[in-house]
View 1 (cartoon, rainbow, N blue to C red):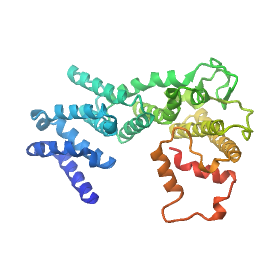
View 2: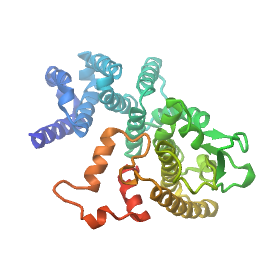
View 3: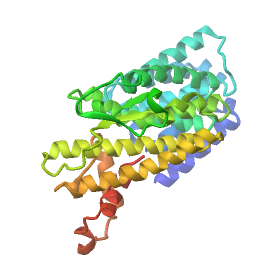
View 4: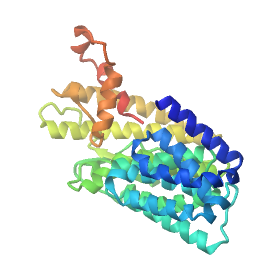
Length: 369
């Protein structure tokens, strides 16, 4: 039945995009779908909300007050934990239709207020959940990459997250000092900015830990927005390419005598450092200037060094075969296990007892972005 639903939704979306006014007699029928949203998959929800958003912003939707009803529905979902993901999908979809994709300025004050309130509602609902924050950042990034958000909306989103990113992760050179941490892999000398990783991950505050879990997704949204606003250039973020990472003591290479919690904390820190470097490569691999290309090559070398270090550290862990990085949700863990051990296939005993660095690193691949 899923195939039938998918075909129906795609066809309905095609009709809406081709001639939204033809949907006026169907508004009452479409309104009824609002009561059955929890039964749709993510891709289906995106189709459904694309249809809703087109109708809500066309003359037929305005005359029937469907737009107002949709906004109320989205706000209700955003305020209900069980349905917040649906609300995020709906909210971002509606944002993509509220402003023409070419507009950099909104003259209508009422619409500007509506957009501001919707953005506030969407971002506020994710403040308590790192998984939801990651999902929101990835959802908006996807819309930007497909060219489905106006420059005005992109600017508003970037303004909302840029200052928070700087406050959460970045410090001036030597502004942070701790006995159990040190700066790693800086490319801009003594004057380069520093990015906090270990201090947040090792903090007793869950809010600090969750910042690290979301860091790659939020940075991806930043760099995608920067590229969309500047003809593909990420020059406005180039300080991050050379930033030092504040990790644990660089001389630390023996964790065999540590407790399981500390071992997993250290390995998680290296995991997120690798993930950060991978996002830097994604962001800056297309930059044309020689300085950026040189730094990108150096970051590739750093990834290889970090992977070797992670493999060496994991080899010292009795629980390495079951290690899951901090911040990985139960759902992600289940998906990763399904990838590592496909259903119906049994790993050979020889492979199961293999304890080299390569096998440890391979077990972590599904957890990377």
